[in-house]
Length: 180
Image 1 (cartoon, rainbow, N blue to C red):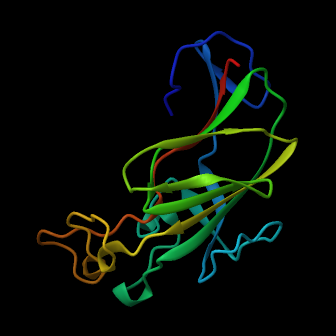
Image 2: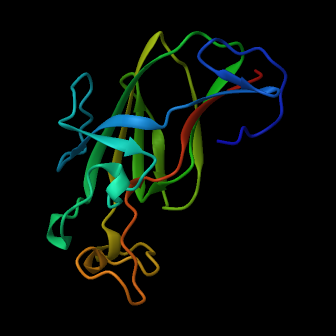
């Protein structure tokens, strides 16, 4: 992650120091589950795990579909993490999520984002223990959104001028301490 601005110190122990910026990387193993429901599973463990920030279709994610017929279009991500209070504000950054995302922290909706390549952020209030939930919907090439050369069929037949889709959280997720 790249902190948005160079700032003076004043961060709590959750955030690591890098120069004058304070941040915490949230990449790693998250709980994950394919779903048909947009209702947030607050307080419930999900059935699988995924390595963030790899797209669902990547072998490195740990949940890559074995064939085009097993593609996942709707999914939940869940991360539990501990935090200490910070001076100033805390921002939660997503480098990119493909395609539609709804983000919840500690039972509260933070907001939504649509677009597979743009980063987005939310100002958050952290507790000692935090539950971060992210709902993702990506119809890949079966939807009306721009998808370039991403094709579900590339899972079964790679090559040519098409690419495997890149669904879900596929860029770094991190927290950053900023002045009030």
